[in-house]
Length: 490
Ligand SMILES: [Zn+2]
Ligand SMILES: [Zn+2]
Ligand SMILES: [Zn+2]
Image (cartoon, rainbow, N blue to C red; front, side):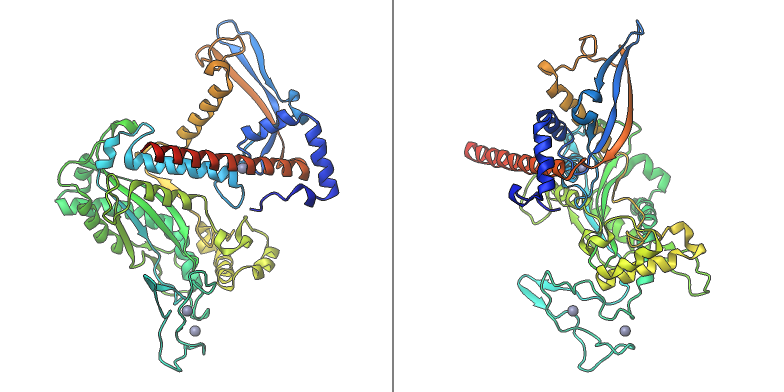
């Protein structure tokens, strides 16, 4: 996302809009921009809020957008995607971090004892669909990509390997050695089946855990529960993979986050790892059969299963700390297909959009074509391969089991309450009658109409993005000051 340009670089028309906005109700407008979290594409709403006293039935107006500049209220777009709105994505990332961290070290209603539960950080990968350029490095030593015999060729006449030692930012990484040898269709089908594969895997882990301690699945569920939080990420080759925190808890009936307890003996991190290693390679999902009569296809995980123990506290044992894991997952929570260029950044549906494929890397364009081609087959209808901007993947980017920790909704609500208290005089929000706010006493009736999305003029947008950049800078300075004070106090 581009930084705002300097005033001197603004087009004359835009400069006029800036002057216009700066001269009319600027302060209140800037306040609305700040309240919308400096969103880059806020939704403009017009409407009013009234409160009705439950006992007397009296109705009083508490808000009317008529009194705002241009008669509109700005509401943050709320996207999680960095490429669409860096401001809202930063909020989402912070929430994702809180949510992840609470499930690892407590807080937000989760007891700190959760840090003592067995928990693992696991990366589930996709299998191979053909050979791709890859970087194999051990420390500073980089090995050749795909060694091969001099003169050896694939059936399509391409060299049968690659002696190159690729740099980390080599654009060839993830591209197939031979596009014709690469099974793009199998890969997009795999992306489409990955959410179901994950669902089956959680069940298989339960069963494997039961087998290891000699219990039926039902008996195990009386004793221990598997909680998880996971995020999906695209690998360079365009296959989805999942990063997950998997935690063992004691089975409890109570659903409040405060009632988490460590599982009884013998449920340990080692046992959980054994269960994963038994369960993961065996899980499969059948692909709906294709009408061309070819062999049945199954989706299964790749051979590489990365399992790391998450340490309690910060001992330097080379294992991962709760903060590292929470930060890692939160980072991916705001990404989608950005690494493949902007061509996949929005939902594409019409046939003629296929012309835009030449803006994409050749391999990605091939995957999009595979989605298009398979998406047109009635027998694959339920996989929803069209629209194809997600390369077949139709799942959620981040998901968690119900008992992992708190929820995004709870975190959002807490933030709204906090902002309300901060704006209210003396920190106590009052109702239309000047009494401390209480849902038991008044009913809130709000009516809104959608006016538009984004800033009304290019000039307003420039002012808002400049304010956003200043706010980011203030936050950065505040963090640095906090860090120096903490360091000098220690
Ligand atoms: Zn936004
Ligand atoms: Zn290579
Ligand atoms: Zn080939």
